[in-house]
Length: 515
Image 1 (spheres, rainbow, N blue to C red):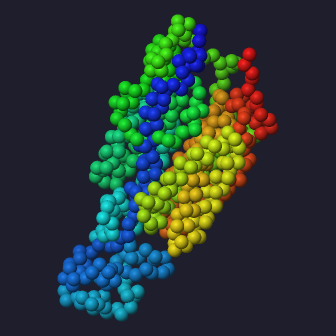
Image 2 (image 1 turned 180 degrees about the vertical axis):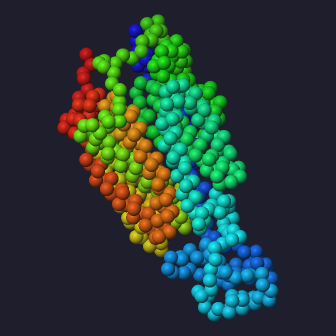
Image 3 (image 1 turned 45 degrees about the vertical axis):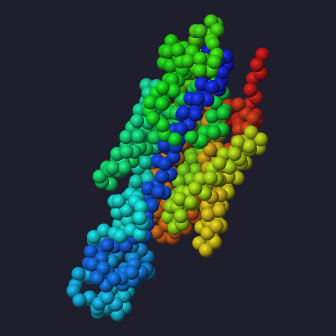
């Protein structure tokens, strides 16, 4: 009896039906991307100062301009750890006192001729933001003593990614790819709407976590579903990241269940119905000899993977540790550069646009090099460029802004290439029975990196604005060196056994010739 791959060769490996399904599934990433990097807009922190109702009344009575009001009522920058005193502290005085002078109210009220001698107190009546728009920072006052809550907001979605990748993967294997995909899209849409109307920070955090729980898992499920409609999955890897949210009903109508999953569940009749649907969509007709289906048979004993297999042998152990660090580095630098751009003080919309544009040449460079030069050297070069660009960005003065933004864009291009390369090479370094577990464990460090990145960016920036970039540079440069310790996978077939994976650095595994 023919296998599924035999039938796909006849009805089209990547024909009209698969291309249409691929396009619909590619729309998933536009709903995932804002969740992943939207913090640069959601968490925008504008200039702010303490609000006091008495100051507003006095300013109105005296007819002060904004500059005069700030000069008379807002504390100056102070040294000795109080660099944000003008944002998080106010003068400890009663601005409702009658008879205050409009020319020198501080001296008139306190008797202090030196403003630095006037005691300060924390903001008690909220803040005034120099920003006409809105963000979660201005809505919930996530500044000063509560600024860490912004870090938690982004860490929460990455924690959802971490848990969801495992739990959603189990649901997809247990109940099917299509059902899982539809449920995650529905829950993601509902939680996104609820987050927009969250009555408190706590509820917003809950909805944010739910978004993370379903969004990445649904995205990964969609990617798996793409590859399982086709015999040749190489075309999917080349455009893995080019992905606009669409209604659930479109996915329901346009996408069938994975025939490979149905076969694994011993539902061959349902699988054949979907195969006939694919054939009809491709304008092909199945001959009688291909009307029955035989599950793919595997030679030899079926092996069950364990976590110990990832560290039991020396080469696979080395691959695992380096890949885990590379996933961690990719996440920290990619998210970190985007978050740091949001607090850089420039036009965040233009800066984000410029830095996003470089992802297109990053993908093009990879497509042109991975099958010509190989994986390892472009990968290492991209990571070293990312680390070096972070270092340059940190020390370029703000007065040369064009150079600073250019270096930052180069850093994002480099780490984008690293991100895409690790997705490809991770699967190429593990034997068949260990491949899924290896990718799952190593890529989990991506979510761990995402959890700690907000704290690196926002907390270290309070010490020195460019300090996060120094950390990114060190992490990236170390990774660039470690990548060179991995074997080249260009021209090698995927390893089938532990021995194959252990010997990848010694020789090419030549695919067996077809008789």
